[in-house]
Length: 182
Image (cartoon, rainbow, N blue to C red):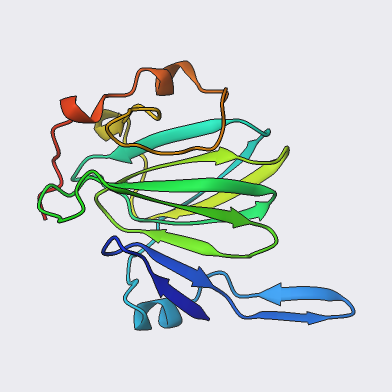
């Protein structure tokens, strides 16, 4: 397993070892012991999966404490541009984002700790996106930042994404009051 730390503390890219033969391939996407050794010791309690057509943009979602969620995300089929925004008000990278392409060809996983907003745009039709969450979904604690907020400066590399009504009503970052103080 190859681990790459990003320029934002806590965000980690994981590339699994892939075993290939004439039957196909095998990889280990989650191993509690190995992940704990690299500093990921969250207790994941919910797995989610979405299927999106090319151009569907989901996000930027988060859950406020005490229902905040760490996430381990990956693509099963297709590809996405995945984005995490630092919402930790005491962080030197508060309001900064990191983006990465995740696909069924690069097999990368992306670890997003507590205190981040998260979103992605599907780059191919029939993209299946999978994510483990460290807490259950709680509607009262959910939040959303506006995906195209100029203050965040995210280049989604798409002109006219398909966005839900709910996501179109996300907050501007300048109006966001962080509850992530650690």
